[in-house]
Length: 395
Image (tube, rainbow, N blue to C red; front, side, top):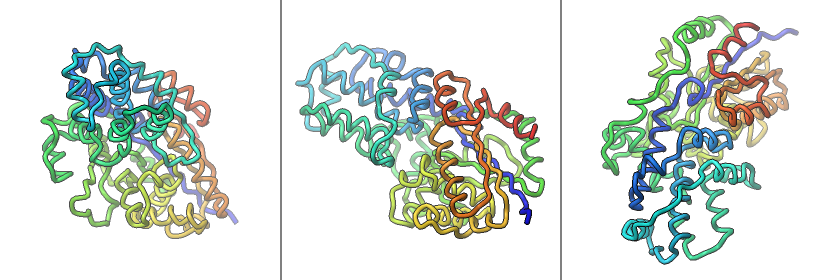
């Protein structure tokens, strides 16, 4: 029996649909802020990571700025305490003040080399990159490990010093206060609103909308950007769901709602199932499976639960169960290896459950380091999403 085909396109946001100039500006500002707290001269201009270094972090699989910002600030702290170990104090704030008073002259860290030195794979893949860097520092020993733990130990929580500052720069102080229900740690207009620009051309967007309107065609956004909870779910009071993925969708200007599986959706699922958000975020196949399920039925809540059920119990449930009677042709557009691996692992899990599925990955980046990394896992590597969509149109 021939089953009807569902052609499903999965799109990452940053580096694919959106040039995340806002995030790049925010990570530079965050590292510059901590360099300024250390009293380093020309803090932003000299000590913030540049475009190339940010791209190297991403090429190494360190795609969340909560990780890379903390790692860069950690490198500055490490350099200062290497220069004068006596500057260490019981708290991070007191240590920064002591460094500032000492008027140290520090060499700029080699952030690209640092990114390349952090292990990509550990025995526990849920250990995030900032925690991996903390493990490296712990392995060296020394008297200052509590300071590094305060900086690097929980960067996915708002209590982390760099994360709070980064979110204030990303959202702006007014939106920060609304989202997190507390005053922002600094005043800023918001980098996303000021600097993000679409990478998807208007012509490609319009053609994609026409393609999506045809029977058997669907598209979904899946991103590590913070987001609101899934459509149809109540937004918990005071839990700080930040609508950064929704801001990207608004900027793209699609004329109909598109299923979105962002970090807030995944975090909502994690709370429902007593897990950590990192357990379900790409490179976990749960996020990719949730995106596939949302593309099948449009029900984000059901898709999220079905994704976790398949990974954790092997049970094909909810929207994913509807794929038993369909052939799935899956294409993912990603600028990071984690999202590609998540999607390919999701396809293998569906195959193991009896779904007829084919998957291909289109890596998207003009940067040589990222293209090299993507080439190891992608079927095609293109400079931009518009060139990637041309491959779809040519099928």
